[in-house]
Image 1 (cartoon, one colour):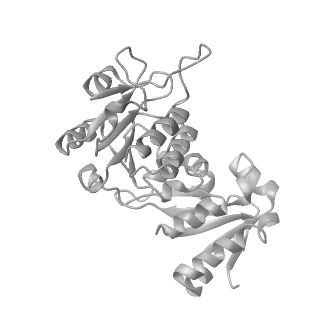
Image 2 (image 1 turned 135 degrees about the vertical axis):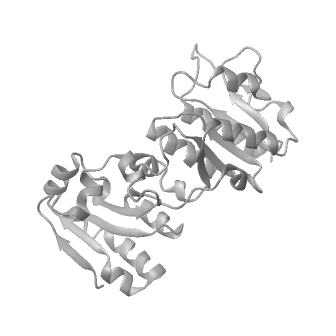
Length: 280
């Protein structure tokens, strides 16, 4: 297979800056005002991003993993875009110790890629034809964002909306933890005010996951037969703001045992997604 292999042993290349010198915020705004870039890590995540139509700009591969992880990615690029695209794609290859020094940590499975972001949909357009929506309100832990999106995809939710203060789903750790499902379930980002306005205008029943006395269980009969439902999940620790809880149509609390007061937000998301899927 014909590839443009570039052996590297130091950081002195501008093309390497997204891998080693840019924060997630800088990657997000890399081509501003156009959409930015993100780092996709592991062959599985890169292949799912390619299948979802994201454009690849370069690859960084550990020399020791070049014949193990990279061929499946190369084959997918050739399948989707042809041999010319693969032949012209910069593929940077370096020994493990060089990449570890560059990135500051072990590169998972020895492979990552720079990829272009796509434009985000407005909330109004995003909600068209969707009946089950998960809303992440200021969730800042990338592991939780990735895990929630994975549950939303696996358990049949129609989409995920994130408030502007959330970790972006294409952040390196979030997309990796999601196992690439960030490319399989639709999502968008908007302000809390815009999300609230559009949900009301489109007649969604809103649920707030909250530890309040006037809550109902996720399997409550009250939720049966409701066609359009959006469930709010709050930030780690503080949960949802009081105004979101009070303005929601229902408060949802998962019954706890053994003196445990609550679940991690990612675990709670899996429970409510499962129950909402059953009520479709």
